[in-house]
Amino acid sequence: PALKSTTEMILVVFVLLQWLLLIFTFICVIAFVLAGMMFLTTGGDAQQAATAKKYVQYATIGVAVGISGYVVITFVSTLMSGLVQTEG
Image (cartoon, rainbow, N blue to C red; front, side, top):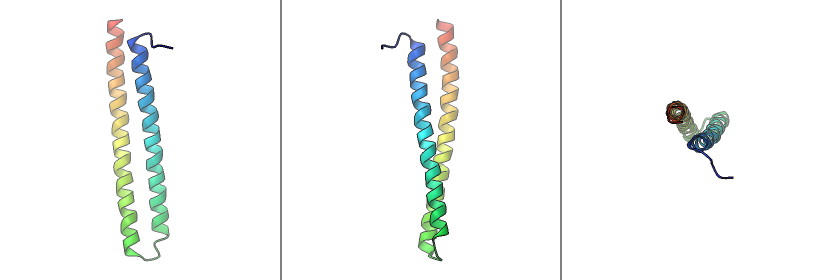
């Protein structure tokens, strides 16, 4: 079925973005788990510990980007819903 209004189109875009953000967050959680497993299995290997620390850093950056993305999506959604309501 075709989208009937701008409001429906905006809603579809924001729902899609929220799903992508959820998948991104899930990937970050998996990265944290893998980094934790690497830390547990280092066996004193400094190189493997350094790699695990990098994974933790990357996962932390990913979580920060994900949270920022959620804030931006929510903010833009709020702005757009206000604009659509004033137009309609």
